[in-house]
Length: 271
Image 1 (spheres, rainbow, N blue to C red):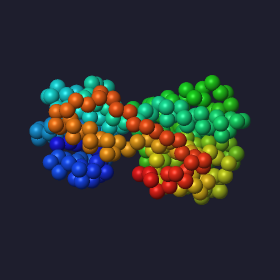
Image 2 (cartoon, one colour):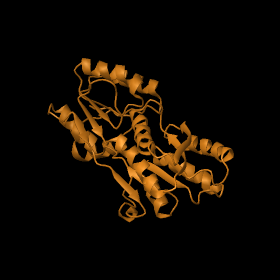
Image 3 (cartoon, rainbow, N blue to C red):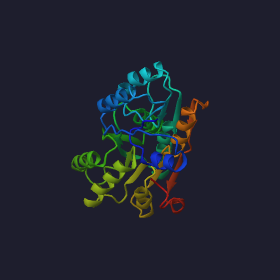
Image 4 (cartoon, one colour):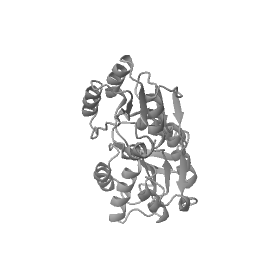
């Protein structure tokens, strides 16, 4: 049995390829306390493997530590916890942030003011996507992050924040928006387009949504860095763990930069 916060693609792959695997799926609803309670409940149900994409590192570390102490193998997807697990599977977020910074340096040779839409505070993905970006631009004084906000990877929070930013900054005072995921990037585009202020602003997203690829094709988004969704690799790895097979402690999935140069290869192939 396996648990994941969400995971419909994992379920579809499991049903098609592993009919002997029973999956219990819960949804933390973007609430770390609920995710902890869900895992605590699952640990009493005799599960063979715990598969989890922890909302925040700190909140989920104790319950994951409990699972490991009970001898239940743990597979973390995408986000990490601050304790030993059997296997972590995902992409590397630090290089994604670095790639975004390098892209902006090339796209804006004269530099500019950047608004950073961060993900959920305390999530390992947020920390690394911020650190990578900061390290890429820190040596270039022409770039400055003039505002940032944790928008929890949601479009509605990004929209609200960007509306405030368009009030705070005058036309021409924002040269780029760096968003930790595509939903927030698309929210920023929505606000700027409605205000007639999108032209000339470089918007970068992450993850690899089809809607982001289309936005690049339409000239509204400058770049998207694909973060692997961990399907079907997640369920494949969980199945091996449930069967008692040995798996690598870290499985790194490849990431890709998508811009106007190569977007045609990705249209319709995202998440």
